[in-house]
Image 1: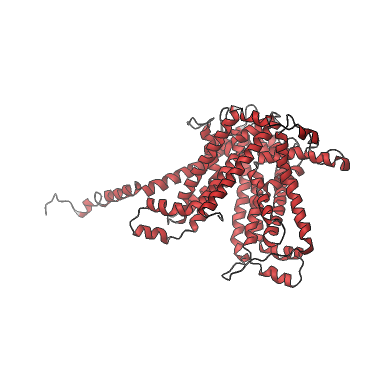
Image 2: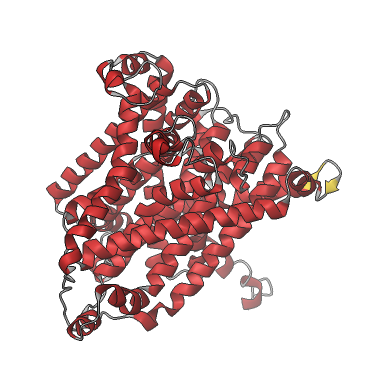
Length: 581
């Protein structure tokens, strides 16, 4: 052997290592890795970067780490009063929502109450009405001076008996607004519950009210508790009611106080960040308790392999009474507020409805609204942003759900948690955090529609992930395995197998995201700029400027468009046979 011939030890550094790098490089440029890697990077950026900048902007000042932002935030208001108001409002509104939602769900799913289809459809109407419009309509119904209900009750109980600008009024209005959420959650629980225990109790002569209290409610306790926590967190995050009803009545909660901090001259971003972090901690704690509580739900399972058909409970002589009470509830809390908006939109100025005023109705407000270029631009911006948000969120959710459900990569649960992280961020907090990011980050998107799109996509990531992952779990792994054995690439499998099977769930998620994005106010109010208005900010400005009749006309148009979107979606669902989704 020549002395100059390389030995095995000499060849080791130059042999396997470059080959390993080449294999890693080839794997890194595969379409599967590039697409999934890009989705992971985008989700991580959207979920983590705003939180990091929010923390830095709150705790780091010109002189280094400081708690001065918290001192400024809580020197303007008593923290104990702020916390007590927030807790009282959230718990009270959640109790109202859950009571109404659970009772309506029980009546429609488990009893022979009349008008079931009408009740079901009417219970979901507040989901279509933007929260801002719903709150404004109740101002004109329950205001002490100009409220219609107060004028009706004035001969009986005196003037100003009902006051919507109190903590009680705030609880009442938000409780009604969130009742559809509780209704949908409880409908699923009542529909899937084995009724054998109820039937045994009925055969023993147990009254309906005792059956509901002693048997039905304990069986749906996990769903009830979960609905309470989710609705509680949602009420903590809401902004429209506290701003329109709480501020005039000097009832401050976290979201309205954040808004107040940003309305100082100059805006106090540090104080807004301190309040935002406090609210994020509370909502995160609520979500953690919810996830912990669902672990023990197995103890309440009543569905087994044995088939069953839920039987309705006969209300007997109380059937007509209960049906009448439900109809009155819907008339007073849903039909009248919507009709109030319609009436206001036909007047030149607001006044208590009378036959004389109805005879002077006109469509001038609609003409003024449709002739204003700003409003037409706002409609265009809202539709563009809502559709883009739905497409981006569902596209990311479809990829990430495959990664978390189908792949075997270690730590994939972390990506799932990242998608759900914005669930604990109210829209107002997302707006504050993005202010911290793009006022300091060298990207010229502040004051443009792009920053609104980022805010909407960030806030809707959890909803898109839930729709996509729920559908992904229903797809068997043998489909893609068979396709891969036949030589199909991952991209072909995802495009030709997964996307068609995911379409019903993604379609439902897209519809939900489009409707909720169009009504988003908190982040829109902080991030829009003149020339880049959206519908929610235009309605807010009209209310602030006292343009009530034009506001009502714009609201009626928006509700009509939303109903048309829902009706079109229903027709598409029936056409393709997935309306049950």
